[in-house]
Image (cartoon, rainbow, N blue to C red):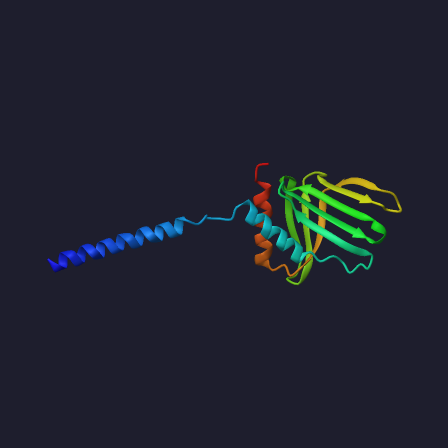
Length: 160
C-alpha cells in the first residue's frame, strides 16, 4: 500500500515537473521580434560606426528606422550636410573589408536605390542616387558582423 502511494506521488511529481518546464520553455518567444532586432541593429551600427577623424565633421547620425530605412546624416561645420538613405528591401549585398579592429562595411543595392543629398554646400546642393554606401566601422568581429548581416537580412524580408 505504501509503495503504491509513493509511486503515485512520484508519477504526479514527474508530470508536474514536465508541465512546469514546458510552460517555462514555451512561455518565451523562440526568436527576437522586430523591435529587438531594430534596437540591436541601431546599437551595433552606432557603436561600430567610425567616421574619419575630420575636424570639419560636427556630428553624425546613423539609424535604422521602423519602416526599414537606413539613414546616415553627416553635419559639417558651416552647417553643410551629407545625407544617405535607402530602404533595406532594396539591399542586395553586405560586404566587409578589413580586420576585427577597423574596416569598411559596404552595403549595396542592385540599382541606384541609395539617395545621396547635400545641403548648404558651397559648391551647390546635390541630389543623386547610388548603388553602394561605404560605412567605416571599428570593432567588427566575425560574430558581430554575422549578427548584423542576419538583422539586415531579417528587415530586408519583412513586409511593410
